[in-house]
Length: 309
Figure 1 (cartoon, one colour):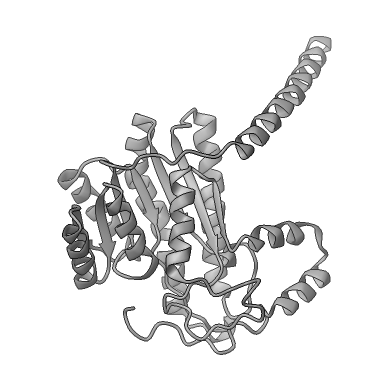
Figure 2 (cartoon, helix red, strand yellow; figure 1 turned 180 degrees about the vertical axis):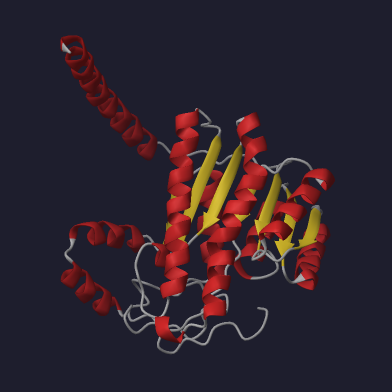
């Protein structure tokens, strides 16, 4: 009994000392400019790469010499993106995938491993949105939202993570949303799926660290609304503080985060501040802040994508 108390006491001292060391290291790393990693020759898989952010990310990776694996339910769209990549001298493989179907994800993943090989960077980008109040959301759309926005992440990660762990090299990128940090009226099913995506990223990151696989990185991306057509009709009360982000601006921020192995990417930066306020403010105060920024009415005129932008 006495021995256990002594061991626990010494362990507590050690933990406090290492916490201090970790904090000092974190401060130093924050001050020192981060070097971007080279992705030339890497194999990058992007889901939902037929349009929007997925398409732009694929093109950016291709510019940096990566070979792209394009997944989308819209086959003609990813073939067009592959054509763009090939025109700029890159290489791309295309696969039509319905990400809401687990067995199809597993099947196409096996085909990719045979055709291409190991994936180095997996970008889970595909997403859908219902955009209705909870009781007005059709069951079918709620199920689809959960299947695509979070369910598919499990199946893609289970497919490609083992080789990353074996090589201690890889990167899992989760395109979540600020809706994965703050509950929003008119986005309950979407928020639930994105909250789950944020939790998946954090849990996976710690699990990899505990396993000693620090060569496998994770990045979660939590942007405000992006002007890709997916959220057409949404409003922001203060565009200078919380702007509807242009796709090129969002992609530049996301790419910077991926290439420097950032754990979390927020866009705009004020999202990070609002996260801190969320953690300390009581519920009524949070509601007042949300109302001030207009998040209680931002979805009132939601239209959504009416075509494949």
